[in-house]
Image (cartoon, rainbow, N blue to C red):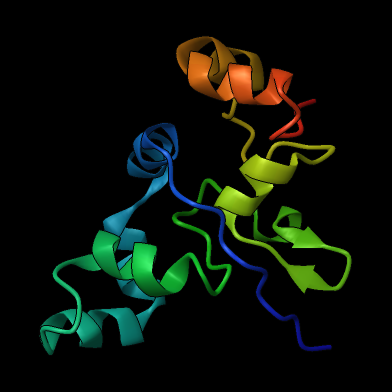
Amino acid sequence: MTLSPSPTPRLTAAHRDLLQLVFDETWYRGRYSLAVHRVAQGQSSNLLADYLTHGLANGEPPGPLIDENLLRLGERRITFLHYLALGAEQAPCPLFDERDYLRRYPEVAAAVQRGEFVSG
């Protein structure tokens, strides 16, 4: 079965902060040689930029803490940010604390209240 990537939601400041916490450059470098090639060729400025441009849209996890099996919606692969926007029954990482995240990022909590994001 081939999984097609879903559209990637717009990045908020909170999403960027979270991605910087879970993005593991060493792990990503070892797993995605095409990303390393794009950086070496000057097509991407660094691996995080490449992830934001290519990896995220392809549903690649940003590091080993994110469980790829939870980044699926039926037969579709979803991005980590899509997971954040849609919610899921489980967090994609055992270290992710949704309550703490909503407390730290009141703009996301407000968006949940407005029905823009699913939580819980």
